[in-house]
Length: 275
Length: 275
Figure 1 (cartoon, each protein chain N blue to C red):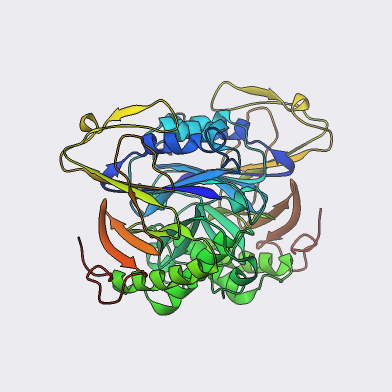
Figure 2 (cartoon, one colour; figure 1 turned 90 degrees about the vertical axis):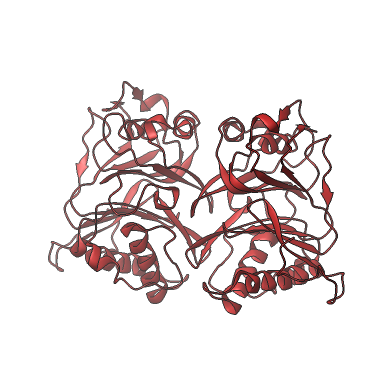
């Protein structure tokens, strides 16, 4: 299995605090030592760092932990290999271009080996051998088949939600997905999030001795959401996502929520209301 | 304009020496300070570092200069912006997936603004606004249209060579292109290369005080070719490529050569002979 970390913010924000906690789990406080990666969206471009080494011992991870890269959308992943050997080509997040946008995907879980290979592929093909990259390429095919660059975002989220339901049936599929404008988080069984906004408090990392006072690092208008497989801090109230819940974030806020377990009539079971 | 650096080797080799020289030209000894990038192929995966900052002042470039990443194929670029603003999305090298392989492209030159936009695009679309990324996406369309994953490499090189001729007519188009198995270098007006093999000697960088004795760093079987816009060392014999010459490298050796200025009957004007 693996661990995910994502960030959505309304101002370019560095992810040093959260990433510092996460990398400890890559061979330090936990066993996810088969590689790690992080993608920062900056404008339409992305800045990517990946390493098949354990994150806790990676010089590149040390640089990312000490070098502030400000971004509105971040996706990170530390890996414990199950499907696919250890190697850069199997290291998340995976990136592809569609409609002139960078799409990024990271997955925690495992899909049924006989079933995921039947997911049909289009123009995007896996480079490595993970179930995750195959699922991502299939997901992009579904988006490309059913939407266009001009489609309303809600239509795209609907397609992603349908795909998430399919993947959930095939196994465990917690994932983060972004096109740089929104960040989708889907929970099969384990994903947490927290939104920090004024008045900002202090927080202490769970995995390493580090404490930050967000009040001194932010302005009152800042809104920053962090998503993680397991809460990264000990003294904040993280929200556990439900199984089969899908959240869409933009600029630090939840802008849409899907919940397969709810009835279609449920007031929160749709993709079009900002709350 | 910009500067290119590429490496092809028969054993995974670090590019620290060459990269250390190149980064000086990104705001130090030269004016290419509008961003830089480097792609290392490792197996089927790639490790990418990019920064819109001047390379000479970049913490990330410092890490790459001091952290040995061993690779058989490397493409690097330092940018002086002409078409397209300064930003990550316009920072070379550009990467796309085709046939389950990572393709990487970096360009030095400038294409006629009215003509490059007429190059038709297929499944790959530019994310930024450079002539270079547009040309790369068009090139991939031509390869995808005229070849398949099973095509012989020579057929793919023929297509790339035809594309290179078209780009040369549209302006200056020195470029490096790789799918991780071969490295293509095309010269419009300025590209040099050197192949280092046993017996290895010493070399001194042109742009910064650094000297290396390759004899202590290599085995007798190693073959390493470096390609650069301008020679990176002062005491080695670099080969200047001709205008409209296209070389294909693999494992440090030239495995094919195209030369548009030669007649079709010329013994070196083909893509099929190893020399």
